[in-house]
Length: 225
Ligand SMILES: [Fe+2]
Image 1 (cartoon, rainbow, N blue to C red):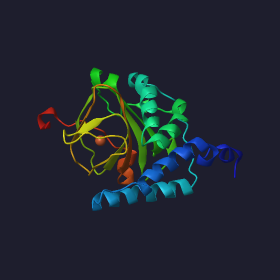
Image 2: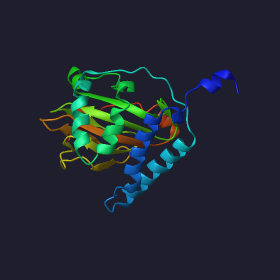
Image 3: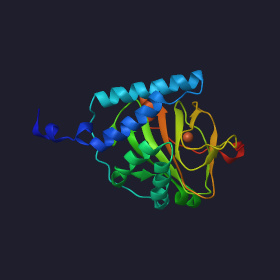
């Protein structure tokens, strides 16, 4: 092994990332599927890929820490998360907060959305924990935000609510601990309550090539429901 390879940081060199991934693993292993067969299958796909990734002790990709305007709400979101059912994951996330790379993902983002939304990846093809078969991350919304209708081609997605109250497609109000499953191509639109920010963990499962280049796009306004 060359000296350079020996110096490449790996997951087990950074215990805070390990603990955060294990918190996410616990959610997909021990929380309920609500009796839904498709959700049970999705949960298994997430934890199988995550377990395999952790077992490989993958390399850590050095990504520059990056803030966005919405991260001014991050401390409040963590505080709310630490008081509720998702306190384990909120506390583990706090320990890596200075290393997170917050981004938009879209080539074009409206000024309004650029002030109220951003996400950070934890594990995936872009890192910081390298994995080809799964993307894990967190998305943060300011109070009173509408995240426009969108879908993900070939990618199935689950959100787990960590803090705040929000709704998807006007169909329910979700509290910390809720899991919401979107099949590939399912159109979805998110709104958040007007008092507090909203922090969601998310998992994406799909073909490796698609995860490497998800090509996030908002749906055309004429399709809005
Ligand atoms: Fe989504």
